Image 1: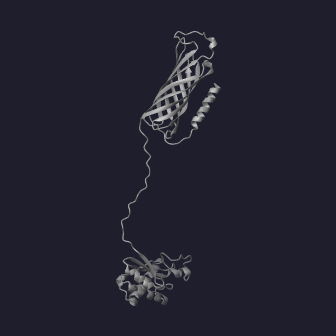
Image 2: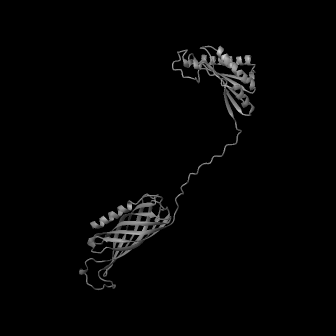
Image 3: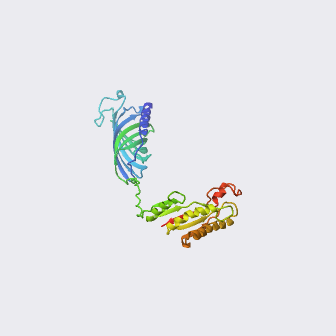
Length: 358
């Protein structure tokens, strides 16, 4: 019996260590037909020789995990100790040492990892066993438990391996263990097929509506040949953005300094050469002072630049607009706002210009 158990454990380990991959072909609502062959190992107390076994099963899978099956198998063996028997024929014309055995059973089967191509399972069942000796026939209760695996070859065909212990109980309460190792082919029919795996297709976005190509030209008033650059750009039906130099102010002042007036004069000619230019004048302050005061100071600075452009450059009011940002959006962060004349504070006391030519 120990050798039988060892053989069963080796085969079980081999089956359970097969590679796991792909998808299972087990389907809920499917029927299975499983013819098989194998070998039966008898417990030594039965005094019977191990023998080949032949059988078939018919199963139904309620879900991909749980199913039920009925089956039957036949084997022909001989008594080990033939010396105890007469070498004569029995009442049915069979030799006295021959034994025909039939197992019939109904099983519950539980599939493990049903979503893989290789699907291990556990099977438990009950039924009966019929031993047909040369003299009489005996029917005995039989229970079976075992493990196995199905390996899908195609959508409807799989290899099936079982290792089961058929526990036979005689009327006199003697119990025998019969270890059966079988291999067969399972054919499945019907059932719901697994939902196909959706492949993620690349999303093709519609091309944006065609827009007129716009050429953006940024010109700084202080760079060389600025007038030539602006004239050429303005001749094309494009958008031109002209970035002017910043105009800076003294602390708490909105009066234009001489150097600020020089910067503005360099820009006036550009405005005259581009009569469609619209100017937005933005005033800023340093962080010193209250927020309300700085807001008003930034507006006064923007207005001072606007007035200068109108007076000196003969620029009409409709081409200009002003806005004050106060101490918001500083050009340089002021770590110490109380330092009124720090380099950061001076950088923030300014007016910016953006001119858009359409």
